[in-house]
Image (cartoon, rainbow, N blue to C red; front, side, top):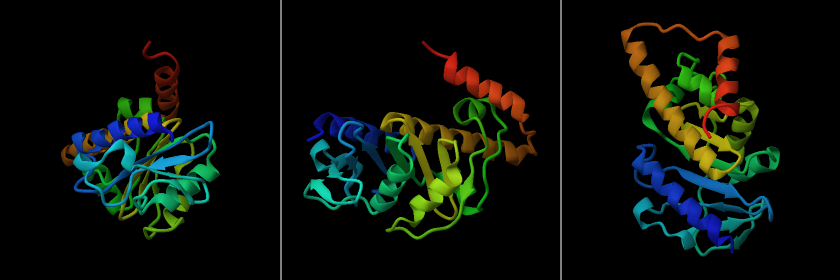
Length: 213
């Protein structure tokens, strides 16, 4: 079931190591099917180059496995919590991308120093608190701290991004790391100035409503 969504998730999962966002088997992408409300997620501990579309696990929002012979991601409970609390979200990505996770290790948000940051996120990327893996606690931190942003850092842990679909969430994960890397480099040279909030709002609006075809 949901074969098209599984195929899409397979392709999106392969983008994570290609973009340098994950190592070994860490990280995951999930998607909620808007029609059925079911969630498809990466199986736990499977190498990306060995992952097949049919390996993905289908669950309902309560965590019952509907289809799949492999164990779902250890982050599944948090993904499902986010979906239950955020009906506007249909895609979630979790990574330990190094530059963004460096900010998370320090418990620091990423201020808006760059127009690319303003375009994509429209605000500072917040940092949530620390939570252990395996239950809903990480999902609770995400929902509590992410606000209207598409990304949030988890203290001492990594990155969660959300989107209207899985592709949007993957794009946000790639952009978080790109922004974090550039900000890290800038901080080695000095202290950059934050872009004023009014300009951030205008940049974000232009990017979301005018930019592109």
